[in-house]
Amino acid sequence: MNARAAVAPLATRKARVPPTAWRGLLALFTVHRQLTLEMARRELRDRYLGQVFGILWALLHPLLLMGVYVVVFAFIFKVRLGGTADLPLNYTVYLLSGLIPWLTFQESLAKSSTVIPSNANLVKQVIFPVEVLPVKGVLASLATQTAFLVLLTGYVLAAYGFVPVTYLLTPVLMLLQALFMIGAAYLVSAVSVYFRDIKDLVQVFAATGVYLIPAFYLPESVPRAFRPVLYLNPLSYLIWCYQDLLFYGRFEHWWAWVVLPPTAVGFFYVGYRVFKGLRTMFGNVL
Image (cartoon, rainbow, N blue to C red; front, side):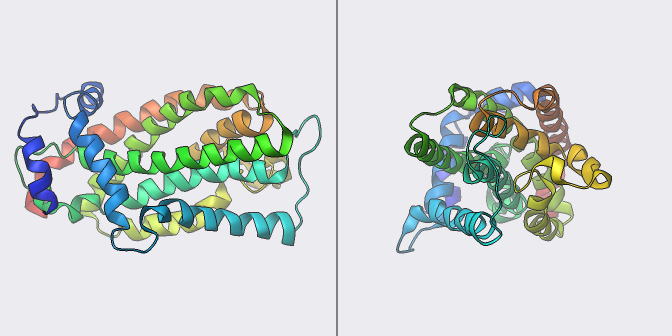
């Protein structure tokens, strides 16, 4: 059964998404909840269909990548960080607390850069809620991130015998991250229909952007002339918030918590409005 045949019965039972950004988001998880969750589940399953390890690759691929980073920076370059009152846990926890949300974000962007053209048959259906397509990739990426956060929590518990109480706030931060990612996914997916090179730009960003966030190093170690790059990068604030919860166990970067919520809301609103404005011509362009 192809994707069109699978989702058409669900789509026909749904009402049209309301025009405003917030009502649109609400509709995805109320009116279109069954369709959104089902497509996210198939996003995870179908990507690795026919492979020996199947859906396990959703974990193995980023796990191997993070393992390489840990070996290179912690054992080859022998970065020494942690084990003090100011930096309580080890470098592996510091590294992973930044890498996990970063890899999730860039994976979501990569999916959104091709999601509309690759589902052209669904987009051309008048009754299909196209807003679901970018969101399904975001939810699938967040599901993988959740598994990695569980593994990181287990590692910290095994290494130190406890986890900071701030770990309990992780679901709240993931909600802000989801809003941020959905907005970015809407923006990238809409623009990619008219500018197909966007997927290549996203690939370049995925390869280089990890060095523009404070995941491998402390901001204090960056030459003062280049520090503005960190502070101008909206993803840095997301990384700092995760490091506060998972590594520091306190609100070390309190100002990041002030900046991140309006940034996430702003990205969502702008992304949704751009998507709604450009989607009327998707069928003609595709």
